Image 1 (cartoon, rainbow, N blue to C red):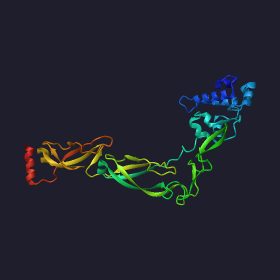
Image 2: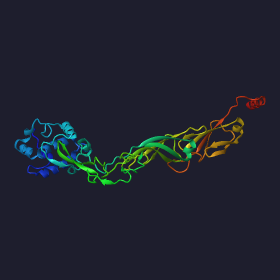
Image 3: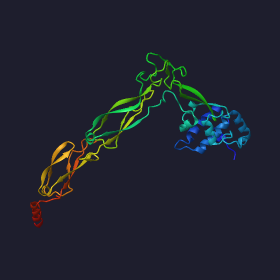
Image 4: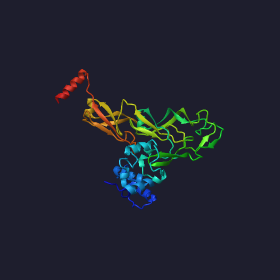
Length: 367
């Protein structure tokens, strides 16, 4: 069935080249496959139509003979299918069959995420490489996790050059406007694709987007503005942090030549404690009592992270009973106050009895 390219693009047969181009942009934007409601098949069809109508010679042939003038030539009369089109554009193949030029600024966001595929992503000072992130581990004690602590850590990492302070020039020598980009930080390039010639903006290869260069490069960092060194970093560990949690220190990762350093991620490892365990914001512990304390009641010393306190044991306490010591737990990391300490009381059974003790237990058993 003959294809009506004018209908596909949405213009009449007397439309001007500018009207065809405008209609193509609108349709391509609407049906771009990267969009939520996009349609890849329709998008291909629109591009095929524009390959013909966007070129005056091909349009003239189409008006005279219809799409049969291009039969068997695949995508847009170029002898390519969609996959060939993408490959050719990516490799900056020959100029499109029509030889028409398109400025990438005219296309807006028609190609969305395909910009990288077609090789016309933007560039310049807005696209500066950020320093790499760093991950490390820090071990702290149980009580340090409960109450918080400050620690100093040493990391061997990329830092700003101590000699040139990051400006890449030998101290005392001038920094000049980049001759390649004239201080713009970016250069314009023409890329030849199957759609024609695309004009794109990319980061200047000489100044890396800075717009300026050092006349004499720093001898210590060889003009990179960076060096490897050991950095001492003070880390504030928040009260209530738990084992396995991570702290992020913004800008304390690897330095970069443009001053945008990465981040430092510190994974906390808490040393186990012989007396306590964590259960969220609560602290768990155990206390042993003898038979008489369990039967008659008593006050016993109990160790907490705040120090030793007295715990009242009611008469008739059973082994395994848990007592709550309010506000003696860990500091709440995401809130106010503290958790509780839960003390499990274990009634200790004597392994050896004297004759007198044995007689007393026998009498107790007969009562």
